[in-house]
Structures are given as C-alpha cells and as structure tokens.
Image 1: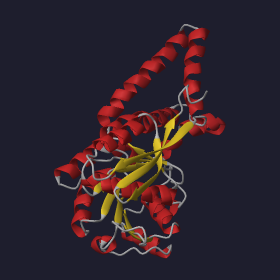
Image 2: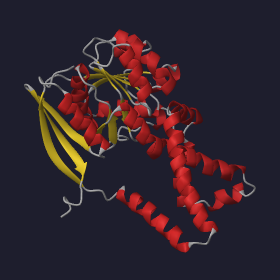
Image 3: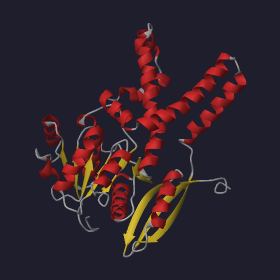
Image 4: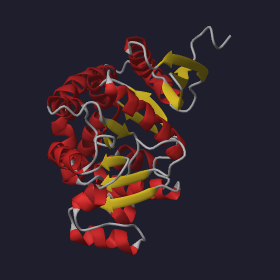
Amino acid sequence: MAGSGTRIRAAVVGTGLIGGSVLLGLRRAGLDVTGWDPDPATRLAARRSGVTCPDALAEAVADRDVVFLCGPLPTLPETLLTVAAATGAGCVLTDVGSTKAELAAFAAAYGLTGRFVPGHPMAGADRAGIGAAEPELFDGAAWVLCPAAGPGLAAFRWLTTLLAATFRARVVPMSADDHDGVVALCSHVPHLLAGALAGAAGRGATRDAVLALAAGSFRDGTRVAGTPAERTANMLLGNREHVLRELAVVRSFLDELTGALAAADAGALTAAYRDARATRTALSDRPFVASRRAFPTADDPGAELDFLLGLGAAGGHLSGCRVTGSSVEYTAHRPAGPADRG
C-alpha cells in the first residue's frame, strides 16, 4: 500500500458506467490511474477520453497500489484471481458488485482476505457504457466496505481513507451477509417493483395512453427498470434468497394496503401510508451525531471490528480514517437518537 507522501497508482478493471465513473473520479482526484475492459471498442473509447487503457489486463494492473474490479457479477471471481496473480502482495483489491457474500467467501477460500476488501458504492444510473460515466457519480455516496479481521483490516483502513478523500464517500462498514440482506430491500426489490410496474404498463391495452400521461410518480417508480436487463438479472440471481425473503415482506404490506382499499377502510389506509411517509421522509431528514474513536493497531482487532460492524448495522458511516504510529482513529457518524435530539 502506498504511503502518505506517494502518488497512489490505481487501476479500474471494467470501464462501463460504474467502472468508468470510478476511473474518472480517481483521475479527477489526481491519482495515476489506468483502465482496462474486455471489449476493444470500450478500451478505444477510454483512450479517446484521455485515459491510459492498455490492451493487456496484466499491463493495466501492473505495479498498482489498488485495483477496482467493476465487471459483471458473474465474472468477478475469475477476474479477482487473475488480477491477484498479476499484482503484488501489497496491492489492495476491491470490487463494486451489488452482492458481497458469495465473492467474499470465494476470496477467503483462495487466501485473498488479507488484500481483498469487498465493496459496493450505493449509486448508479439507468444508463450503460463508458459514454454515460460521470466523475461525480459517487460524490458523497454511501460506499459499503466489508472489513475482515487480520491483515484485511489494514487494507480496509487504507481503502476507507482513499474513498473518503477521493469521493467524500460515506463509508459504511458491514459484514458481507448483512450487506446482502439490507440491499435486498433497499435496492434489489425496487428493481423488481419497477420492472413489474413498467412491464404491466407495457403489456396493457392502454400502453400508449399510459406513456402519454406518465408523470413524476410513474417515471420515478420505474426509473431503474431502464437498467440493462442482463445487469438486473445478474444482481437478482446473485442475491436470490435475500430478495425473495424481503419480497415476502413487501407483499405482506401490499396485501395490507389492498385489504384496506377493498374494504374501503380509510383509517387503515391512512395509517399505513403515514408509516410509509415517515420512512420516506427520513431519507432527507435524518440527523447524525459525529464522534471519533481510536484503537491500537497492535492489539487484538476484535474491538475495532465490533465497532465497525456495529456502526454499519445501526445505520452509521465513516467520513474519515487516520492511521498514525500504532493507532487508528475513525471519524464516525451514527443516527441521532431521542436523547441526542434533546
């Protein structure tokens, strides 16, 4: 891992919308960054935008301090092994895939936990390709990182520092399995619902009239249905059990709404929507309490790991990480409780 006085050398493998946006954000921050993509036309487009993008993967990742793996979910295990073999032991590896448990277990099985930090930036768009990439796509976004005990914790600290400085990311430390359970409801089920709404409109006899009248609610509710179909299918299948479990919860609430509507029960319908509105409002009106927490780096990392995973599970995040001498200090933010609000 690069020291504090060294220009960080990064590589991005897979330069579509997500990878391209990571690459452009890193370049904007002044990092020495290279890109690579399996598609020759995409590599050419990257070069035309001024990005170094060799034809050979090994050349793109050679002598890098960090490599971001940004290809389709099914390709990540093989790509992880290839990149690990082509880079030095001090090179930190991370990914941006929308599911984490399967790849984390794969990395552990191949002895890569010490340098691979599973990651997932919580931002995206319904477009695809490097032409849609934006350097500011992840600015201020929640960016999940999955810390592991042992040498992997040093890689987590280093990567947290990089993401906070480069993207002003809100780094959310979570276990891989907790991540997959949470994103099932906040990201993956919404893709199912958006697809169902758009699909129903597309198959209905009034399709053209619906599209003519569609306003904000339809456009917002179906936005992610514009995501490339293969990407959505890979995401849902990669997190199938969690998605099915959370979909059952959504069905239960929908059944509650349906029952109230069928019974013309205005009170029950209003109460359910008040609950829903309160959660929706909390997205933009959620106060946090900031604090700093330090740990000795030489001690048993159990307390540090417990703190990190507890923070993420409670809805908190990190905005900074600083390692000095034999200690590490985190700048943490947790949701304010009733006592914090006075």
